[in-house]
Length: 473
Image 1 (spheres, helix red, strand yellow):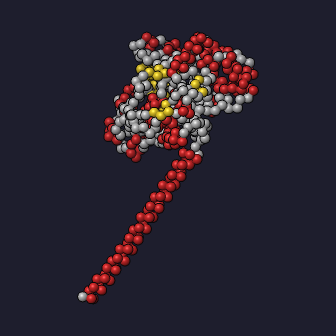
Image 2 (cartoon, helix red, strand yellow):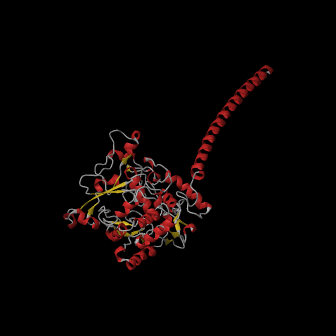
Image 3 (cartoon, helix red, strand yellow):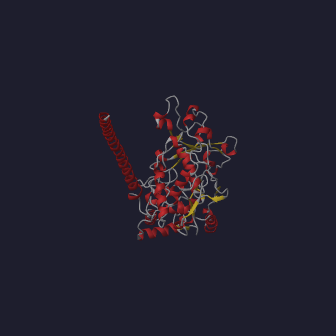
């Protein structure tokens, strides 16, 4: 009995020691794993903190937030900055055809600042295509004689051939290992029969929230001011239906003023540039429009809409709070140049300053889509908008006409390009055809033809002063 008891006790001690040893070893492994995981998370957190906060531009500078935001609004700004720079994947809705994987890819200059212009037209531009409808009267006339006045009833946007905007990358070419070799998507290329081909340079987004906050009546009033000042220069106000409110809003975004709000501007960019669908536009244009789209790819595509509004809201919020560009040094030469700018009547269309509304709401990036909510941003209220634009469309003549109607604008009409931040821009005009301000001015025609003639006749000293003024913006 006693021996058995001792034997039993010794056996139990042996088991307990072994169990204790195993437990200690297991605990060490657990703590080691936790330590490694913790180190990874800490390093990731430090990296993200540095990228988002430490290395972020100051308030009021390019790529940074507007001045005067609350701590909560700033937190949301930096959080949505990550989304702006994020590269989307096919599983998240990228493609099947697209032009860029992120917003930053097309809006990241100068010096890698969030919200800047595209790097160049070839890699970060959009190609829009179209052709005249054969049955329409303007199809029977020489293109150069009618290109400026082509409207939506005159032009086929070639939807079933990849139009109106081509996507020049595909998920099967960019993510080769994800898809079978026999299931390849043909990238967008200019189809035969397209007689209207327009390159579009990716413009900067700085100060977009201030632009959106300009009251509609103020933009409409610019038409009457211009009619009174110089009827030859008077522009047209365009409007679009806001898909959230189902009410018309005056357009102000896009080369042809095709968008009235940052949400619709963002939705168009998500769909055309990245192929990401939202509840505004559930079907990706390329997947439903091109007849030779491979059927085998559909089983790899995520359900639509890819975004129910949350991503769109975050991107719209970030753009809304991007600071406008500051003026450069104002020298005596710049002051003289500003007077020349006014004397030539450039300031009639490139209106130096407008103002935002006394109360401004911006979409809340944390609101669940599609039930988007808005938040008041006092930092945008009753603020000057020194954009140098009337936000109207003007007929700009044959040299700049692309013949493609869009959002109510005709083939030769373009929105008055805001001039703020001009000193940072490398590519000028809608197609980025030049980096020379003088060349860009001389390309103006149509309603601006007489102004350009007067500019060309200026003494060289006054021209130099004017260019110095423009380079200070």
